[in-house]
Image (cartoon, rainbow, N blue to C red; front, top):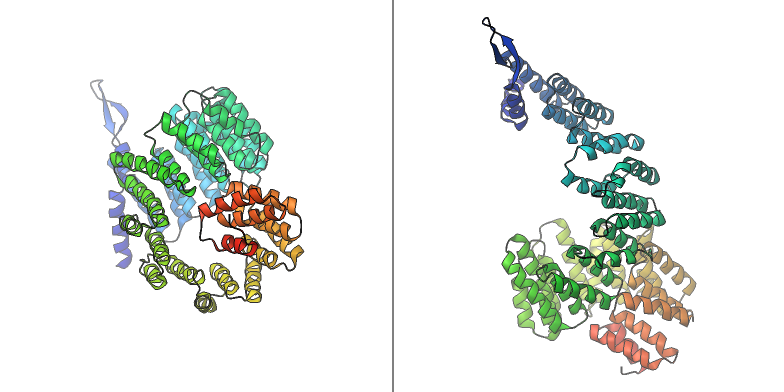
Length: 589
């Protein structure tokens, strides 16, 4: 009885399914004409027996698939698809084969679909995706060509843009780049597709580690269409990979008649990451002048001014951003408003206007921002001298997942650690660590609390445990190396640890700061100045300013040192490292 009930339920579901609706619609179409006695030809629809038989086969296929025999299921469905030629059945058979994790079966079904419908975009795309999953790269050329040819002209650019992601898991990236380039030979000759095609090839070359080839592809793509965004975005990706000639392609694009604000905004973000803040301001000003209703530029400019402590300009930019969002409306606008409110709250708190900061935080309702709001509220309470209230604010934040619980614990421990209660922080974290001894975040934060307690041996043991668990834990290597350097012990080992961290995170300005500091401790003052100057350029920060200023000071560059320290004070007048450095050197900036 239970078995019969399942069959009936499945049959009912089949009748109501979109797949069956498509099949029934196809079955109602006229299929042939039959001469009548008077010589007249009349159209006769598909007969009822055929529809009943098809219904039975579809039911059998679905039942087999759901009852633990997926191979029989997709084969029954494939038989029905072959006999009817219906694309909906081919699609379902392919999906069933894929879900059954039968690679060869999925390829067989997809190819049968493509043979029945050689001009079908979906059939060729399915075959391409199955071949990529099977890592049969050489065979992907034909379905790639066919897909591109079958797509409407307006959709081809998006397909070309998606190719690098489709091939991102290929085991042989060089072969993938060659296959795609060969398959796109016709697209490269088409002025409407050449820029996007060269960009796809360039990105695949970059995935294969061929920066020179990627730059050549970006150049050829831009030559084919100087106004196309794709080569410029590839150039930006290359610039982020430290290819020095790539930026000129982005600048050439921006000199065109109508550069897209989204592309110019991406360039501005890269400039900020590079520490080229003046250049970033130039790009953002160009966007807001040419496209004053492009809201995201005002938001980024407001954040950049806030980072530089130019609060009046930050507030002006954010006011423009919020005014544009009010006109736009909708859920995205609400989330954007909250992002602006968060920056404005930080500005207000920095000025000591705590009631306004609290009021702005009260207005933030974006899901997922609750803990961020709580930590900002806690920072305000700390500045007011109310550490226990700050801890209560963090504890009151809602928890939507176990991860939120962990983040709240770490946030509370950080508050304790950084406000004179390092031992309490250590005890809290160590108790959790005993329950989860391999938790990387817990190990790292417990080590930081041990250091604040004056237990460098305990800190070192914990960080070495973390490095053993996670050999690419560059934050642990950097923390251990910096601690050794700062204490002036085992300096060659400290340098080796930090250099490994640099290799793993070459763009991290704080790790560069550690490298500069260990070079200073080793007596390599010129090299220390070079590294720290670059780190400070890329990330203006009070702690980096403290180190760079001291290197300049001991070399007799006192005025430059004072200027750097003053800049550091502007960013964070409460920074411990900066204040301790000035106190030790008996200097007023």
